[in-house]
Length: 419
Image (cartoon, rainbow, N blue to C red; front, side):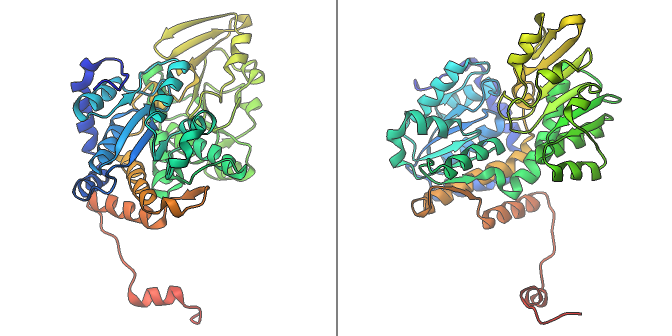
């Protein structure tokens, strides 16, 4: 193969073994791949996928390939690529991959354009950079696209904005919003992997520290719960009064970030919004405060403002940069403000990504079958797909649940019976 751009092909064998290890924890996706291999329902479909290039993604690519799809993969973040996985997908599975950990923004978008040169009929996105680039720079390709999927909260926000402004040119399924995705991937996956990333690059002890979590959506809930489980005192900062009230009733302290900035030891942004931690917050933070981001894009921490405040900067450890402010205070930013769980660690555990990527695979099949009849808007994952994935996951874990009796079904559909 010549149509790829990865860091080091000599890492391919190690990547293959890690893909195989992840597959052990992905029984639902494995069942889908076996079905796809027999039925070949995606035969001839050209796909461009912009996702984090991880071991779990490697198994999703194998599943799509088994179904007959002609797929190209690029990274959805410059720091999230696992180079050995990228090499293995090229070497062992002949899947074109354009992804290098640490690639510049220029190379990042060059890779996205390479994926679009594939002239996809279905897109698969994680943050909507592929879709955004397609709508701005490759509009001539739009007419041939059946539909697409989106994996993240951040991407769904962007796509809904496009739909509301009547610029979205084809239907997108919001995989992120599937119950078997955000209830598990966002809460348990992000919660564990964010703490994992912070600990890997700092080696700090969380017990006894004050951790400030900005945002109490599904991801924020997971991060806050895991930080508390590690012995930290957790403060939640929110702009939504309902979520703030929920956090309070879940037992967390809730306060404005301006107040929390004075007492926090570790700050974690997980909002999907821009400039959440700003200059006024940096000025109030105590010496040694650690700042990390678990949101998709590196915009939640106002790094330009911090650079302007800093008297000096230096790299102390991999993914740890020190910013020394006037008076000698030091603030430490992790992984350039990029998503910490994939920049400094391995991302979500395979067991939870099993459900997320099962949603991706079955949503792609749904688009192949129904895409031409859909409007140009953002759709939820069909409920039947969501429930089937939950059923398969329970089955793979050896868990049996009850079923409604005929009498119970009749009761739930009726209205005459009362007390």
